[in-house]
Image 1: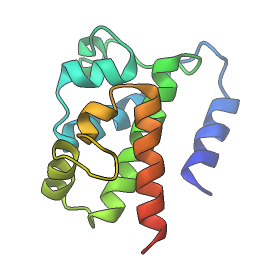
Image 2: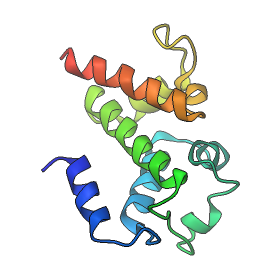
Image 3: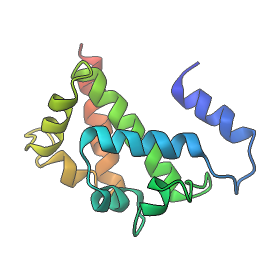
Length: 130
């Protein structure tokens, strides 16, 4: 079963107003491993702050844009870590250095939903060339 199928199955067993602590924790861990600061990660998710998520006082609700962006962020993280062989330092470096194919810094590009999807598309194309 693929990650997407597991996510969809988990979502189908919940009501639309349920929070998803697993996606919340996974997204927070991915951001931590990539060295993405709290303010930048909040912006990626479309939130003012992530302090309640980090403190365990809140979870991402499955029917929100923030939840969808978290799922996309996890997808980006997974693709990037596959490409760099799980090397956290290489992944962090890639994220913070100019990428000619993307025409910018990936960390800046992923601050918008469209940019995050562009980076995922790029990483997916790189991953398929292995």
